[in-house]
Image (cartoon, rainbow, N blue to C red):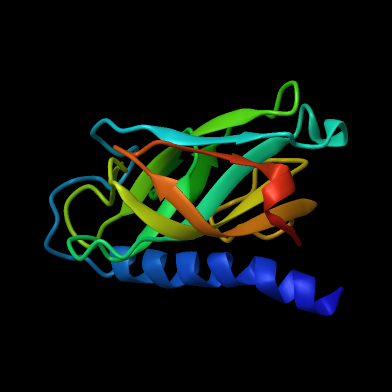
Length: 161
């Protein structure tokens, strides 16, 4: 059980590092609040029914050189208030917009990449702050292929955390 909690913490630790880098940008004139751009999202299917009505988000690693390497999935992210808006799981499924955490500019832009990434999908009773502490369940995926910012995975194909 300890190993599973540790594996789920890896994306959260990477996110905290990325937020630290974003927070150090003193040259930006933007407010680092909601994010901009357009892109797809991650659809997770076959989520166990006990998680219907709960909140879902994802965090992953991108190898795209023009970004700092962190992708986060949430309806919206507000760096000023250390908060985010999450969608709820319904009928065993959820689609979550993806965001790239940037070092400069507005802090977040919609993810629209075409690449294979590693990611973790987490379930929460309540919306967490950006530390992502308090997940009640999760799965990790070692290989998720995004095309123009969109991907679809089954909970059943992930490694439960």
